[in-house]
Image 1: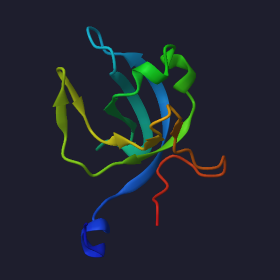
Image 2: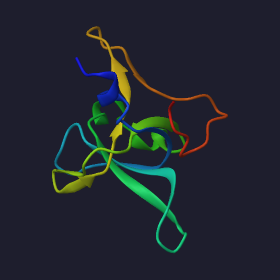
Image 3: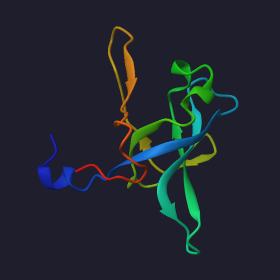
Image 4: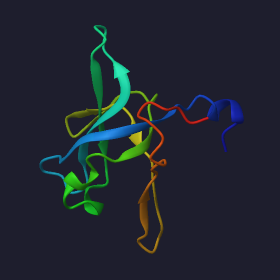
Length: 115
């Protein structure tokens, strides 16, 4: 159990997947480049790299491109198989094999914050 105060620290944002590719020499990992409506110091669009263990669900990672999904965006960066992951994709699954990405409706733009 976490307290409500602890839960409030988690930042959840909508992000549009711009590219998705399998990480070499792994079975489960995909490298996602995600638009969270962030800018670099010069004001240019900045994509965030997120490593996700969903490759078995998406044999053709290209089907993810263009999807807007929900991500935890304030996790400490973590190195996974030599790739820095800067967030976590939200998905759900069942013991029976059901699986779904958490996708907001089409009116929600990249960068929108869950409240």
